[in-house]
Image 1: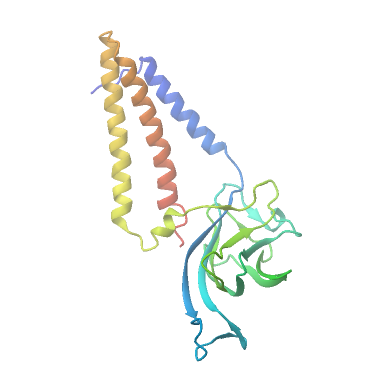
Image 2 (image 1 turned 30 degrees about the horizontal axis):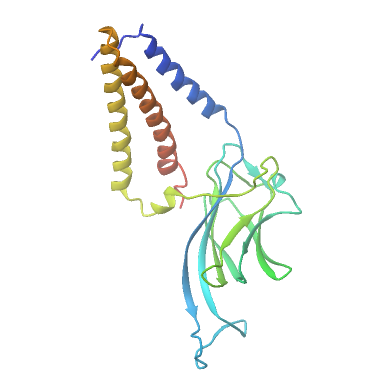
Length: 253
């Protein structure tokens, strides 16, 4: 298989890949994100059973649940204390009559990364406030894993809010592929890599077939050329995103 560098579609593909790459590299922004993991019930009272009670600081409560929350910066620009509004700091809250009991940082992306975690009451809700210590900052993919003990029913949900300067939407709820791969399941990683490589090979063969049809002046060449180009661009974009997320993303989890 030979590649004709004089063919216009070769330069179309090359210029498209370079343009996409330069756009990705030039993007410099803060992307505050969070992920709410599955909730586990630690203790629960039984309705109508007076002999079984769950107490928290000598106060009877319905149940105690544990939820892990991941907060990180998915952007390329660092996020520090100057980026956070003092009136609306990074806060974890719960909905539907749930109550936060306590919080504990389980892990950070760097050993030197420190946060101050406090519980503050806002009206009827208890919120967890997270603040940077000294001049620390969240670089790309930097973050923390925090465990929240709370009460609440099945409809009670945790959320992360906070006013980040330059980011009107604030913290965005996002799924974490790396969180599903905490145990570093090599089979899944290799399978994804092989799938992307196969898609790239298929797109190259499609392009090669389209170029041959173009040389023979067949009208069917355009379908192969266009579909092959689209497949290649999608494969390159997917490989960049997945490889970055799985292999160089939140690997500290």
